Amino acid sequence: MANPKPSSLPRGIYTPLPTFFLPNTEDLDIPSFTAHLINIVRGGTFPVIAGSAGEAPHLSAAERVSLIAAARQALTSNGLAHIPIVAGVGAPSTRETVALARQAAEAGADFAMVVPSGHYAGAIKADRDALKSFFLDVAAESPIPVVLYNFPAVSGGIDLDAEMIVEVAKRSENVVGVKLTCASVGKIARLGALINAEPNWGTRDFCIIDGYIDILLPSMAVGAGGAISGLPNIVPRTCAKLWELCNSDPTGKETKRLHNMLALADGFAQGIGIGGMKYILYRKFGYPKKPRRPLPFVSRETGGDKIMENVYLQDILWEEDQLQSLRAIRSD
Image 1 (spheres, rainbow, N blue to C red):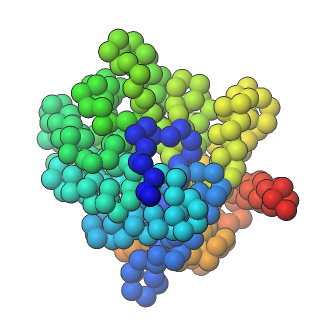
Image 2 (cartoon, helix red, strand yellow):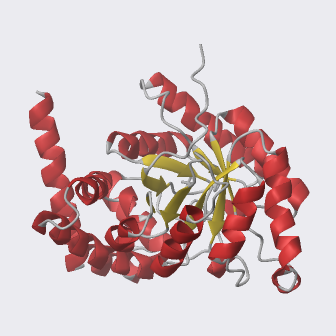
């Protein structure tokens, strides 16, 4: 019997999975993808598939579906069928976005993450109603709950304000959360204030997720329910540990120590891009290191050794090893 799909976006740490490609053909490397998926889930995080870090613009609709289906099968076969999958379904048109949401649901996704396209961004930004209609039309036709995705850098500068997000969420109960990769703690606070002041919100559960682990502690202080960050690809247990500490002891010394460590590493990781992240995973796990062209890749000769020698990266890798060793001892 299949597990019922969740209707509320769980709080916690989410990992936007890279998409791995075979070196010579650039075909999907499903075994590497599913191996990495299981590692980050067992490390205490939830998977996001075909997002910006997963090179969604480089994937066909069929490839997105293949990744989601492979992930759902891998989770089920590893006793992790209860783990929800967030799937990126952003596309240039409303029609294609709805089609991707339907296909994602059929393949096993639980939530559809929707980002406005950068194509025609000038026209969309100039018409507030058109932008609202995009999200509302997708939410009306998506068979799974929708998570709004605000990332101006990939959306032609479209930047959702708190009022817009609340307006959309109020008009569709199928909109259950938002990911804010605008890195605005102030916007998170304004969102929380607007939601708390809304008399007709009732018992609806709307989850605000920040887009970087380096602002997790202040974001949670003003209402965030977690983070979707690239760093858990490298150190899922460390990021999950910070989440636990932010909940249990937000003003504690260990919480601040770990947050500072991850903030420094996240700042470094944001500067090395997808190619740099894949190089770290190549050195750590042996996964293919090349993004799909035309994205540049990193090799030992083009700065790979310098990346691996970074002190902030070394610090979090050591921390992750300690947590993994401790968990192994406890499971013996």
